[in-house]
Image 1 (cartoon, helix red, strand yellow):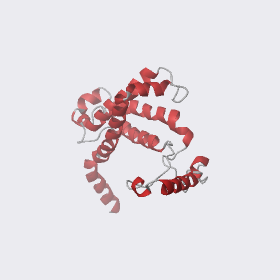
Image 2 (spheres, helix red, strand yellow; image 1 turned 60 degrees about the horizontal axis):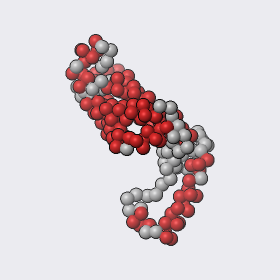
Image 3 (cartoon, one colour; image 1 turned 180 degrees about the horizontal axis):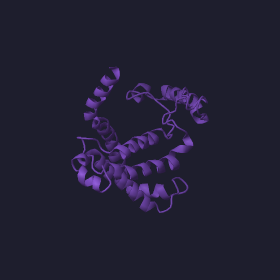
Image 4 (cartoon, helix red, strand yellow; image 1 turned 60 degrees about the vertical axis):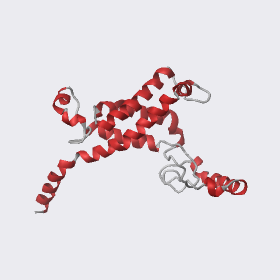
Length: 205
């Protein structure tokens, strides 16, 4: 009885199985489009940052890599929004996330925002000395601003935090893109679905 009800429930819910994939696409698309637009708007600076070994990433072929990253995020983000060639565009976007993780963020640990109470910084799972020192630094910064600045105005848009710039966001986006790579843009809610016979003939969904 319960087994049958369970089976019937999920059979009916399968009609809406495209909705989670749609939500993933709607979440990721503006993030990628904005990132690509920002790179395109200051392209020469991005190329310089990609290639400079002193204050940048020191990557080879910075012009080519900057162009590829910009195109992947800007065009890929638009395609994600439309649900067009979803599985295909997820690939360069995942590569972009991996490059960002391993060239920019990985030395900072997991957390994007420093939180000394996190198990991913206090030694319970991972240890991050920089994050553990953040409360003292934040307290000093607040004290200085309260003494010499307009603290109420400075915090009117939100509390002060210490940016740790870890891999948290990049890894999260990678996992979300990986889901789209395996499951596609979603039934009924993507252009891919309506062109699925032709796309499936070519290995896409």
